[in-house]
Amino acid sequence: MATVTPTLTITSSDALVDTLSLSVNDSLAILGQSQYGKKQTTGSLAILFANGSFTTSYVFLKNLSPSEISRGQDGIVVAFGTNEELALGPGEFAFFPWDSGTDLQIKHNGTGAAPFCEFAIFEF
Image (cartoon, rainbow, N blue to C red; front, side, top):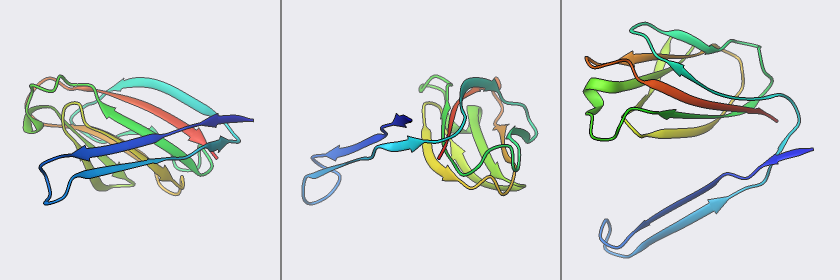
């Protein structure tokens, strides 16, 4: 059985009154298919993962635009079905569970060059 180990660490010495130091990780059993790749966004919603094409999965998405470009120029919008729920600015990422009950779609949301979206999906 394959496993994936996601780790998230958040630290800051000046964002709050107290020093912030959070770290979580997990060992996720991957019981089905996995995919990794990159897809260039367009100005309209395009299906990244179709409804029912996977079982319940973990999804990683990252906007590959350089960080010096603004969110308004090279943002990526992530939609579940037709509901636009997430906005990823240049260099930003998300890791979340997805139940495959609706299409997972992406689009370019800005005026600059259409960014690439890096993706990975792991069925559990």
